[in-house]
Length: 325
Picture 1 (cartoon, one colour):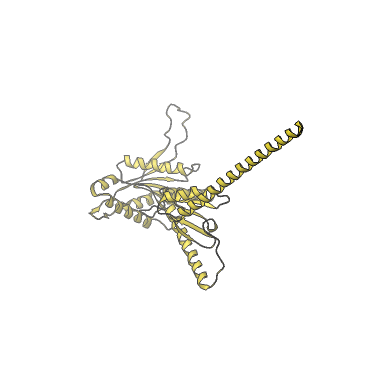
Picture 2: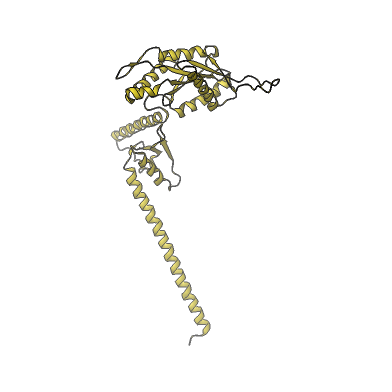
């Protein structure tokens, strides 16, 4: 006959055995689910990667996509991996077009070279990667239509240039340029003619500046020209030369030759020493507005405000003065 004490111990042992088995079953089930999810993710990742073009060497690779949605899905699929070297690459318009990471994160590690042909093939892949990387960098920093610097790139370059000009106590000239009545060109002759005008104006700007100056398509029919180490006394005449380079002769399009007047707003870093990039561009933009109001196809220059008139506080000074070319 089993004593009550022994019966109680047996029940406890049986209960513990059941609980232990249940916990083991739950743990096994969770492990199975995690493993299956990981495998499913890997299969999905392989499927997604097949939509991109792999360009790479034995250590580095890039997956380039025609469809930004595919690139986005690959980025999301790779997020769960730990210690992955991952970066997103974007076009100038902000759409994602590639992932750039270690080749070991995309394909198995490279084998040892079996012969000279394998080595040459790997070298060719490396050369393709360099070309692809340069192509990606160009797309990320240049305007598609004109091949000029895009807005983001020119602001970065201008920031560097202003820092240099402050250290060297030199002058950087910023010109905000706008094609006058550009909308009427698109409306009358079509967007193809408008694109012809933008490309030709871009070429003329580039041909009219020095090799170390910078020209950017800021947006639409607006351009930003940055003259490095510019003599302040010659800045206005240089802006007028640029205006003449654009408006001085007709632009040939697929329909007819068109006169293309341009308005320019000029701001000098020496006049606004405490201003950052955005502020100096804003001063040039305000000068451009003044050129538009004064009849267009002209140059106007921004100047810092005069000192406060403490003796006559009832007549405050304007925030910025504009002078004619």
